[in-house]
Image (cartoon, rainbow, N blue to C red; front, side):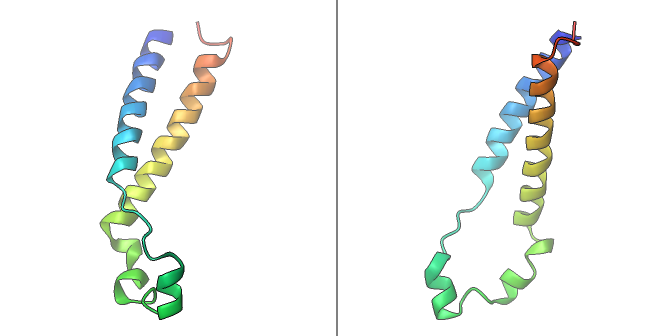
Length: 78
């Protein structure tokens, strides 16, 4: 059981690293809000974009990472 969880943990770690590196940076920052460029069509429809899907996958992989880390550190897994 521990071997399978360890392999799953390693796979999740690698996938999480790849997905985090695929995300785009937040360049707009304060400049975008001051100039009004932050309120564009693209920013309003980000829920259907590739960025949104990558963020959802990141959250899912992060949850899997923490659950697997807790399981591997517990005494119940033989």
